[in-house]
Image 1 (cartoon, helix red, strand yellow):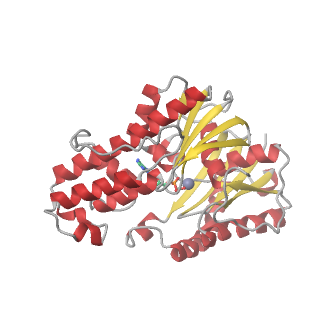
Image 2: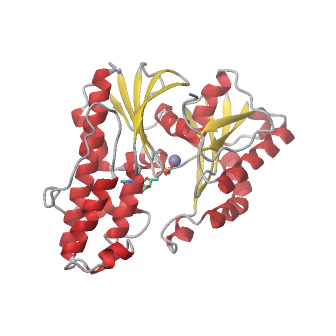
Length: 350
Ligand code: KG4
Ligand code: ZN
């Protein structure tokens, strides 16, 4: 049995996990800073780094204790190298280096997006690790929206992605417009439950002939609708916090119409791409893959099997870093202790 310790600190979650053979989760600790950042309406980078410094050692200790293992049982330490906030990434990277060096373990650097992808290989709630390539992956997080074709482990071909806002970013901005608070995605989903998805005719950017996405026009259309409902006052354009004064039915209808527009585009373009490249399976991952409408609609419309991680592995966690780290470790990757973090690390080396 190969045990990998995963460490993730790229944004506002301090996380550590122990994974066996790249698929069996033995422990998964996530210390969320969401309450700390809520007062700022988003992640405050310096606060995030300081909080990681406080949390990282106890979180790793809890992950080892939860898995009922000690350092000598581990084969490697896998850690997120990027993309993410540099100051946050550095805390996890330096902790991982120190632990690997002190314990004589190999260090394995992992791309955060690769981590999200491998959340689908962890065996939980029906997900299997034995997937049939080629696999088409839709990554939908706060910072990324990417369609990636995987021909094998560690082989990524980027088919397309957002040309402006990421899907999660659009959820977060629309939540602010509607006065729904932070984090935006779950709040929009809850508000949408009592709304009519056909109440507002919002645009869908199909960008035909490409595998790209665009969500900024949709966000602007929501802003215009909010302004109209508020009687044309310029408050909504001054700051994206206008929606507090809207009737709750209008907020629910706008949330539902927006969510439907995002899901329509994500699903139709992913299914089209899967047919075009003859993918055997579709994997959806990243924070937005926690969205219930996206999960249901993708499963209902895909001609091939669809995997989505269990909810607790959709948003940032270290189990996914350990999973990606396992396949890199198996492929012979051993990272030097001189390694630096890369805030804008891309998934594909082009
Ligand atoms: O993957 P993640 O935890 O962090 C990044 O790597 O960015 O994704 C966070 C994003 C946020 O934008 C959040 O609003 C979105 O995922 N999100 C959701 C839902 N849960 C989280 N978006 C829509 N519906 C959800 N239920
Ligand atoms: Zn993420």
